[in-house]
Structures are given as structure tokens and as C-alpha cells.
Length: 348
Ligand SMILES: O=C(O)CCC(=O)C(=O)O
Ligand SMILES: [Fe+2]
Image (cartoon, rainbow, N blue to C red; front, side, top):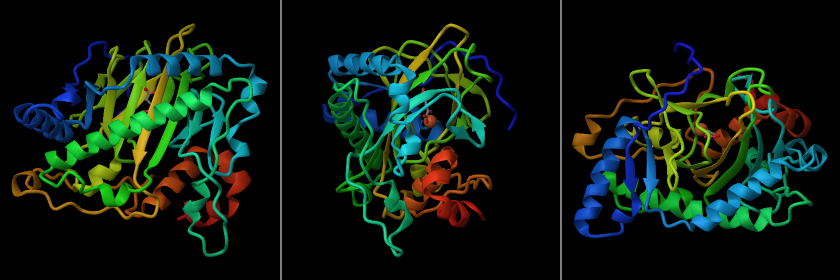
């Protein structure tokens, strides 16, 4: 793979799908499903309208996320991720890594709000991911807002997943057995500082997402790029009122590569410009095993197979994947809380 240059193509060339058509007339639904099938195979990336999320909720989430990042550094560091064995909390820019390289973005990570599991010698290691989120004391409105938003994007993610099942010639609930009763609901608010802070142009390095689908909200600054099957980088700039939806490796594996999970990255903004986004990753239950879906013949013929990345192999056991990905992205948390796993899970 040649290294991407840091230019961002300006025009939005990815298709836009209107989710309300899936819930409309039968012709509308059939049209939506056919377009979805096409885009799943071509990119696994599209813009979504007709999602029904209250614009006021979106506005409040974005403005409150900006207020979070504007808090004094010590208030953000009070909930630094390294204090959480469950990989929840705040990271400074340059702290997270993609393939070992620093990502120049600061962020607050949450997931399903819960209690820490009791960990004994026989507890599956991924149970360590379960636990409470960390919230900023100085911004109490952030918690209810992000939890309300998390519930909404979970609803959208599951709606899309049902439509994906239908587009693949399956019953709508074909994936339900690996996300019910509690999918992984990984949400992060993100700020990309300008090039005066970022030491490289890597806002976030080239990667695929891991789960079912990602629901991405972008504020107004571009930066997201998508690598096509032909190796061309295309821009996915913000379009007001839409989410960018992309499929993750779980769906690529479940469909033997019929569904694509395009590689993407974010280019750090120019000096003096910041970029905000809110990314939600819908994943399956950690105790699930990724199934192989028997596709109808005409789709089966278009399966690409799975290419394994030797630097970042993916496993059918979801919990181990989720844990590995967190250990790799956050070596500081791994070192402080999970040194035993670094030796056993990450080595080899
Ligand atoms: O911030 C963005 O626009 C995309 C972030 C992303 O791809 C990720 O966090 O996986
Ligand atoms: Fe991503």
C-alpha cells in the first residue's frame, strides 16, 4: 500500500441513502435495499439521511462535546483513560495509536454504562472491558446527553443492520443472536487539533473499523478519507443532516468479503483549524462468535474472500478481538492494568 498524501479530495462522491425509505412503501423499501446491497459491496461507506434523530439532540451533543474539550486540561486528565481498566475516559492528542503511530486527536471514550465484572482466574479476559464510564465533574450535562445519543445511534445501527440482513437475502434478524440483548455501544467524542499541535498529518491512521457498523457524525471541518478497492483515496466531507455509515470487519468476515469494509483515515486539519466528530461503533456481544452467512448464489459469486492482515489478525471470537484492539490502541492502559494480557494475548 502506498502511503496516502495528506490532501483531502473536496467533493462528496459516496452515495446517500434515505433510511425512511426502508420503512416506507414496499417499492421504497426494495429500492433502498437494492442500493444498499450495491454500496455494501462497492465500499461499505455511505451517507445516511432520513434517520429520525432529533437535530436538537445532535446540536446539543456537538456543542457540549466542544465545551468538554475546552475544559482546563487538569479536569480532563482527572478522567484520563489510564485510570480505567475498562478503557473508558479521556486521551490527550498523541496518546492513542494506530499501527503503532500516534493519532493526533483528543477524545473521550465511553461504552455501555455498567458495573465492573468480578475477575477470577477463569474469567474470560474480555470481561475486563465491562465497567463504568468516567465523566467530567465540571460538565454534568455531558453524561445524560451522550447516553441519550448513544441510545439513538444504537437504534439507527440496528435498523441498518436489519436492512443489511435483508440486502444479503437473509431474515431481518439474522444478526440478532450475536447482538441481543446487549451489543457493544462504543462511542467517542473527538477533537482533532490543527497542524500547529499535530506533529504529523495523522489525525487517525489508515484502518478498518472492527464491528458491525459505524455511525459517524462530523461537524463542519473535512478530513475523513476513504480508500477504494482500486486504491484511490476519496473524500467523505461533512454533509449537514447526515451521518456517514461504514461497515466493519465483522460484516466482511461474516460475508466472506462480499461486504467491504473500506480502509479510511483522517488527515489532521491545517494550523489554526480544529475538527470535531462523534463516532459510534455498534458491535456484537463480546461472548459471540462471528458466523459465516450462507449468501444466495448470485451474491456468493461476488464474495472476495478474506485477506488477513498479519500485523493485525482478526479472530472470529469477538471479545478477544475487542480486547486486542483496545490493548494495541492504548499501550499505557495495557501496561498499567493488563500487563499479564500484554504478555499472553498480544505476543504471538
Ligand atoms: O473522526 C472521524 O471522522 C473518523 C474517525 C474514525 O474513523 C474512527 O475513530 O474509527
Ligand atoms: Fe474508523
